[in-house]
Amino acid sequence: MKKIFSVFLAIILITTLFGCKKAEAPETTTETTQTATTTTQPVTQAQPKDINPLTGSKKFNPKAIGRRPVAISIENQPQARPQWGITTPDIIIEGETEGGISRMLWFYADYSKVPDKVGPVRSARPSFVVCTELFDSIFIHWGGSHNNKNYKGGYTYIKKHGVDDLDGMKGGKLFGRDKTRSVAIEHRGILYGNRIPSVIKEKKIRKKLNEKKFSTLYFNETQQNAGKRAAPKVKCRFSSISGKRTFTYSKKNKKYHTTDWEKDVAFKNLILLYDETKYITVPYKGSTTTYLNYQSLCNGKGEGTGYYASNGTVRKIYWKIKKKKLYLRDKNNKNIKINKGKSYIGLASSNHGGKIAF
Image: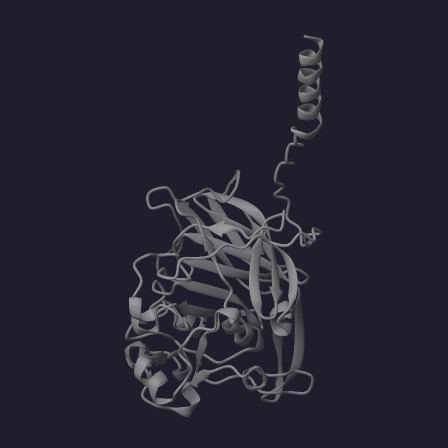
């Protein structure tokens, strides 16, 4: 009996010492640009091959599986709104380019589904050239900035990085001018999306996706809250001199809506990232202009903080760019999962007055 009792006590002692884990600290939501300090290797998961890699949707063209996306440079001046096709991209990335002006990249996982009329298409900027590389995309633009003193232009980045691109400045059947709006010609450059497949084929551009160059997104099987903090309204200001996007959550369709582009546009996910920025002022047409570069994007590496909002809630996240691939992680350095659907990625300056607010 004593022997049995001794064994029983030993089991209790072992359970007490090794079976109890310390409770995880609650998630913080204070705005900061501090980076994660953990060095734990992130957990990776295999993603299904038959889904849209940008939205997680299972309703995906079988012919587009394993094929590269396209990224289209789109203007955001008031004269350009509402942009043709604004509700159709799988992902929109937006940030400042120069003089407080923002610009967008529209990503489509299946380039055969790009609308017949998209635009206004505008020129390439360094940060946005590198953004196209995050998803091994074929870059579509109309022109680009040139080298000027200590500024390296968009064309230099395209050439240096070996980016496959289609440029409206070279003409061709892919580009044209809209005749329905009474605005300056630079606000009327359009892309004929239905012609993309034939032009890519004619120019013999690589179509097969290089998964080693693709930033994998991980999706929840069922819809989940982003975090514990409610976020019925989300704002992202790009910098102290640039504009902002305001999103309002709808409980009816469980999406974030904005009318900032003079049309109701909805997203399932908002991914808002802080990055350090640099202003570069150069001579331009008898005066000067000031370009803005996102430092991590321009260098293809770096890290910072941000926020992920979905389902009316928000959480703090940590991002990292390594070898031109984007990683979105939690405080434990694990890849976060986002809800299936379209996403907006906003870039806020961490050192020039950018702000993410709820």
